[in-house]
Image: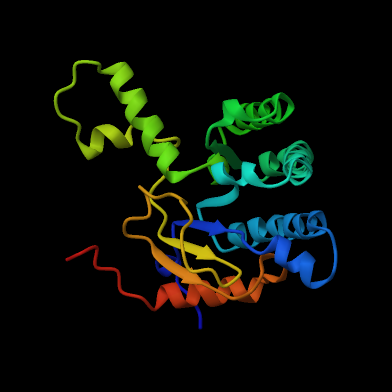
Length: 232
């Protein structure tokens, strides 16, 4: 099927799930799954660019992931820092603007520095926007938005949706048109709870390290065949 540009999602979001199960199936430590998942993630970004998808958001680390072992959490943060420092020059060259979503101030100092440098380096790019959701939770985002709103407008008597949206982590991003989750799990796990109200959801049993370009095209084709009514 040839998918017209008008049928593609403007904003694609991905829950990259299944790295640990991929490693476990191969009797390997979980870090090997995360490493392989990172390699697939790099390729997926290029697949989206090639198809003209303007916005890509990926779920890299949730507020609940702190419950994992200290060794795994430390490795994940080191991998994210390495990825940012290694890949950001290439993203900048391709005209991609980098953003982060989440409670960034709670992350290790070196990772915070890498995130801030990546944001600053790419802030004027306009070809595409890549958002990394790290230390992110949908309930946390809404809570933080309410706190920020009340801090700015302490005497507000009525809060509207439009007011609250201004205080989300990245309010300029359009809501995701399509959310893909790998590994066979069929839930959002707190991902973009506010923004996903009318998102199309696509679940695949593929573990993230096994996700391919053909799998992406299958999801995009499925999306192109859906009729979005937004409650009308």
